[in-house]
Length: 281
Ligand code: ADP
View (cartoon, rainbow, N blue to C red):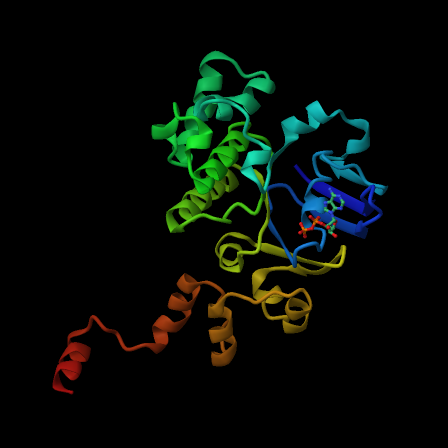
């Protein structure tokens, strides 16, 4: 489902101008990460995509239709949104009913509702907690429950606000697994995040925001090499990018990319000759 943002500005009632004339097009099935300092307008921008906030001026188009003409309940079928703070979202008394709430509201019932809930619980490895009260879980687990609840709605666009905050490695892997599975099915996946290594591993497009505007928009292989843009937005690329920059040659921005790029340059540690050479030194 393509998204088009046309010259959108947004000011909160307090007078803070959080978006200043932002234009942007996101194609069907794209994976896009929004990065930038706190307060740069990332959350305000993604909240425009499903009508959680409406532009002060400009317009947002979803699948070719201006969302100003659509009801929130219709937009909820198109764009699923997982809040940054799970406690802004959770209000049911079991993990299972929390995850079922969104798809139930979209009209799913019976076996299809159960299948959507089971799939989301399974993808995030939450099934064993299905009967627990969400508030007995850790912050990180509550966050996964929220993501599962939004994933269970199976919307064509999935927006996650700071999904990896507070997650350990396993939690991040579960989220990555879910995003990869959704991407494969053609879901448009959008995140707001500070986690640049997460961006590098999972996103094809990075949008850098600063002071209510977009300052860079491109592939990690391009954006991570624009030092002045990153430092202007208070960002640091993943450490492996610094290594790539020092080495010159082909660019890499993930550890696995580094391994592939550097493999030809390293001695083959499995060959007998190398082992015997090592043994002789
Ligand atoms: P980010 O997601 O990049 O941290 P936000 O979109 O949350 O940025 O915030 C952009 C600006 O809008 C900031 O100056 C922030 O303080 C302000 N802001 C965010 N939410 C509100 C709100 N509910 N009321 C007033 N100002 C807000």
